[in-house]
Length: 404
Image (cartoon, rainbow, N blue to C red):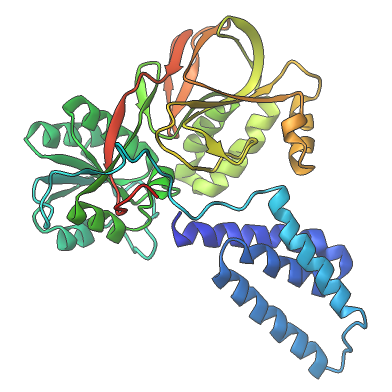
């Protein structure tokens, strides 16, 4: 995970801990914010701690006495901050690993990137930490022998990638988010090419799991020639490298995309979430022949951590498994029960939430064709869908020279 993502997680954890400790007073709230954020990002914790210390000093200068039980309040606050990890687990800072026998192949590229073709998608987001815009010039400077193409408004990402792959390059790459990477992966698989991943999206889930946190990491990976062979999963015949889903999550993505051009991505997500919670209906399907009514179906390419409905990172990228998680709509007040179980840490024992590993599932919709998602991109499926793995893998560049 890139440092920016840890900083965001730290800020959110500080807000959660601070709010939970507020009944015990401002010192407890400040201690909870610092202790919570320190688990994700020490820099954020240091800044919050300095601000809290300055506020305490200002109170003393104004003659406002500190509470006699300050130490106890600070201890309570710190305990609450640390305790947030039991509801929302702390994210791993280590990249995922793969088996040593196929973990680090050699990318057929030279020190200066000759033979590599990289497409920059400037509309993908602002994921690379410290970048003020698309990383086109940074890539050209770091890999002077590579062909770096920046899309303009008239270009289609898949068409440009296909043209470059057919032109004889030895590795194809993309600077963008997970959706752009998914598109490039499909091209790489069809042409039997390694894939170069440059984090330039909003969340960069795959790059994060590979340990490619910055544009410089991507450049270093190409120069060193390191690549990891990771699992490829498919939904309705289309590859995905992170996750696939159907149900309410797909409705959420569609609703967000409809709004984000007008109000921005995160505001659109908040509005879309309210709409979906109010209007969404469960899907009626058969999973491997069993009739089910489901709100959400999440399928991860390899096992995700933590358990529950907020899967965030993977420890391996080649375990040959799918991680299936569903929210069952067959129980009364299932979504409310799910939320209550999540905030009380009892999700594993909730009757409305199920999770299991497998290498494939067959889905038959009894309500017509399904709307599907893969790596954050939605598309129309049929009423009969296969999701699975058949041993397919793709080599992706990574800056690490060993299996973790």
